[in-house]
Image (cartoon, rainbow, N blue to C red; front, side, top):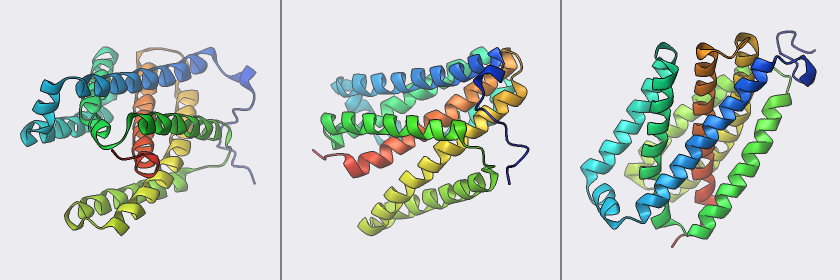
Length: 236
């Protein structure tokens, strides 16, 4: 039996113009953030001084990681309370910091395999976003399960930093792929429902909601890419 609370998106003619504009905002901000992350990563690897500063100094590297975690937590918790301009600047700053730390993948994997994995991820993400767009079922319980699984994945990954088990490494790798596949579908559907219900016009509040959505999808994409890179990446 179909859930009456689930919004039907199959009729594009019935969507408000504001909703369509807000969804374009979601993917435009996500594309901008991904571009900045990639450009920053490539810039860092071409600058020996920056490489030395970031990766030869543990305090700098872990300081950047802590700044990233703190910034994304602050954005996730407080974005609706700040101005849209401030939120946008912080999102851009986060994507640039993320690019600086993720530049390390260029020292581990070949450039060709990174490029191939990126396009594989982009293709998968597009298909999953389409699935999240048109699926009609209520995914609330599925989403709760995925977030609990994500917490377990983080704990297992931290534990494996100390045990360095190859078995646990591959278990977390494949679990990470499936978790972020599910989260991409769930987050896409959730974002569309929220913007459809509350984004009656394109104002500062609704644009901030769209920005939160782009941050969620950006994180889904980056994490899916990193776990797929473990599988498809060719080490140097």
